[in-house]
Image (tube, rainbow, N blue to C red; front, side, top):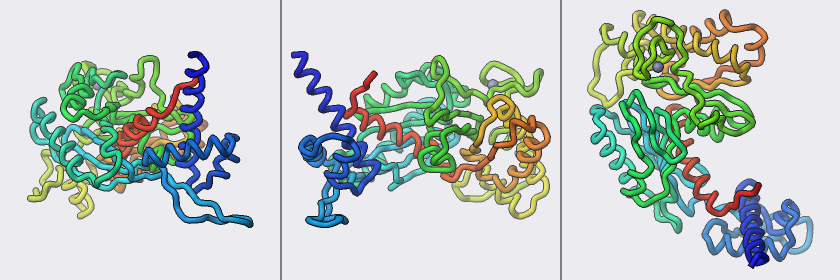
Length: 394
Ligand SMILES: [Zn+2]
């Protein structure tokens, strides 16, 4: 019994190693897999056959050979299934459908006008249904759903506290699983955004980064040695609630003077209300109208972006002095105003942070536009699907 168990375990581990090798190095031949994994050719062949039967790998015509018969090459079948990634913002839902390499093939943005719990959930379900309907036929179908939520999420996918949505103890993972019968991964939106930027965006190839998601609130997340840093309970990264004004405005988190009250999209929009900017009939959110007004030279709007940018710089200075990071990526919706907030941010960080700490620092803006969170969320669903094939060791 023991032997059988061990053999099964060893086979599962080996299969996972072979699959990972194909995903990372494809196109690749069986002989090359054998060489790079130190598994014998017979083992590699039988595992590759299983992966082909699983629709996860396919063969293409002969590749390069140094002589003799040219080998058949193996490729990862990245369209053997699809994943859904969702950025549940406070004023919008962005849903993407990606293949198993994380490439977006469909997307939909739904503005959220009504923030009642039922209408947010109903809009969320509707957007998931739309992506399921639009998914191309594939052997595996939809392999999972990943969601980034602006709040504190536990490891079971319960949203413990999302102040900007007004949610407490919402078992979101269970609700979606019950409705769609698919695996669901719920994460904090900044974690999802950091993952998205690390895999596909401005943080690609970097081992360490801090991601600052500036939307209606501010969320932050750290990737340290290529892994998300969770803290003792997985809740690290609520830097949006750094206190920057000791007797400042009241925050929905229960505290006062939090950074996000002065440097977020909401902070901007609250003050922008009094500015005269022509409204448009488009479905654009308010921020887009103000960016356009700034681009057209509206000095009051430009001045307001400047002020919010300076407050962003203050919080970033605290991050720089605390973590001495090599890269900070500013993402989410407010990054769309890069042109108007870049200079004040740099000016404040340059003048207020400790020189030794800022020396290696690069401040970048998201290169995925507003898609970092949705793409990161989808990558969680994909990793979860692949981890089914893996056996945790150690
Ligand atoms: Zn707060």
